[in-house]
Length: 531
Image 1 (cartoon, helix red, strand yellow):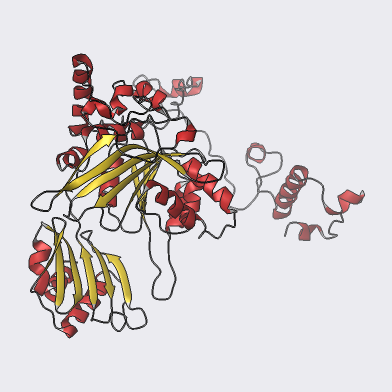
Image 2 (cartoon, rainbow, N blue to C red):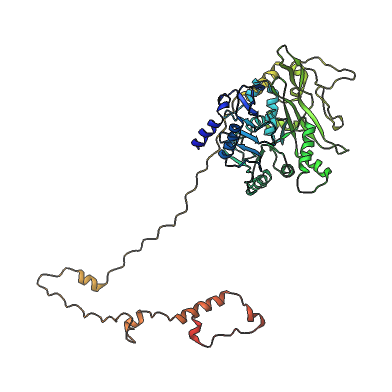
């Protein structure tokens, strides 16, 4: 493997500085002389150059490195390098500007939810609420566009799962970095050049349902396996997570609906919508902004369908963009909407006692209520309710005691979680057979005692008894003798066979002629009976 790695680095020599640069997250080769990189969320064009033959040779070497084939008949390659980097290659003439390669680098360092708060991707209140959603076993979908940070956010959210639960992860390319102990990771496998050996996400999902999972985490849902996932979420596998390409909470539901219709199972659209609406609980949307920053834009709850069969969602937290500063950086703020989630009564029971009505009140944080399309007909309770004709309300600071309690709770989410090791149960020793009871020694015979007793000096040694005549091997002892009664003659082969046959006939039920009341025929020759 080291030899292949050196060979690959030799073929990719023009872009080696970017491969070794940790600040570069993606390398985009649009052609031999058109190479771009992404650094800290922004795109930059580089001066690196390939010659056309060398670039195509590098693509062939990548395919060989991962044990795949790419040629004119199969001009596309989607694979993962051993270091975790994802690559996608397209050969000409499909790629009109020349061989096109995208390398999305894999960083072994794991991002924590506290770091996301430091990066202003979310607030502490949002992080605390996401933790509450995980602990109360809400089904969570992370949605966003390409490059918006869906997989990174799924990594962060799934790291909040308790350590004593059994987690099954399913991915096309292994990117999740969960550290829990009871983890069962699965990775799909594409078909070989003969179209055989493919293992899809749907196949792995079917297997995971038979492995007693507490949580199912799917890296990305992109096909008919969405219907199987909705079935799993509706049949007791709560607390599961996945990602999907969508831009808003309602678009997420519609996207999953269209993916469910790609399943070979024919089901009416109304039933599919009902399945999606009942399976999903929380949708977390993230986006990549023009300045390269990535932020959460929505934390919304999915509600049952309305009377018209349409999706309904209510926003719990939203991001409001206010503009840009002089350097072009996006300005805005996260705030709750004043809407209580439907599982509000479960929060205190799971240890989130600080999440009372004031926790979801934007006025408690000095913000106005964000403009959001709330669903009025679902009896949503706003906190606080505005008087008729009043559009704005003054901020109402929290009391000191409540503010201190909230501060302690929010500080907990920023601390690195110390996963409690699962208790180890010692394997019981195999049961051993009890020792056999000791057999007392037999009393010696009188003759033997007399023989063993010391003889006085001068006494003559008694004459030995005449030896018994032993019969020759194979010759039977004389009739009526003691040896005849002790030595058992070996039974003839025919008699053994008759005994076994009789035992088998007694053990087996009657068959054949016995069912008609007839007696089975026996061989005339007794010697044939033992054969």
